[in-house]
Image (tube, rainbow, N blue to C red; front, side, top):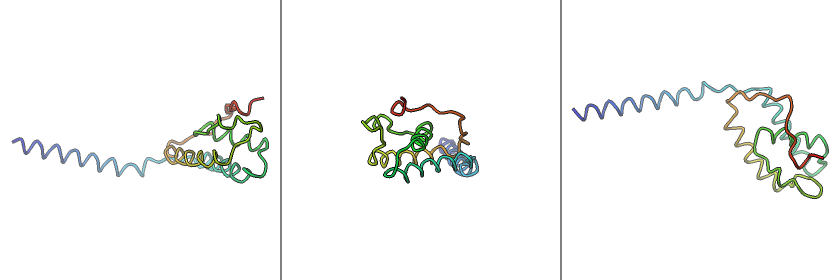
Length: 120
């Protein structure tokens, strides 16, 4: 009798687990507008890292930092620049954050908090 209960529990557990795996691909609601804007700003940072960290660059850092982890405390240097080595480490975490959250239908906010490094 104990063997039957054990077998029923195992079958139920495996069926629930397989149902959960089957649903994971269908539940993804990725906001295409957010994705386009997010990667536009990420690419702008990459493309202008060594050229010009101007006001548009700061807007991109502000946008990205509002949603994903950015080492804004490391931007607090004399020139208020984003060091390339810091960005390369942040980039890994930024892309990881996006992959983990892309299916949450992330909405673009109308305003963003300016990191302390860029406040006047």
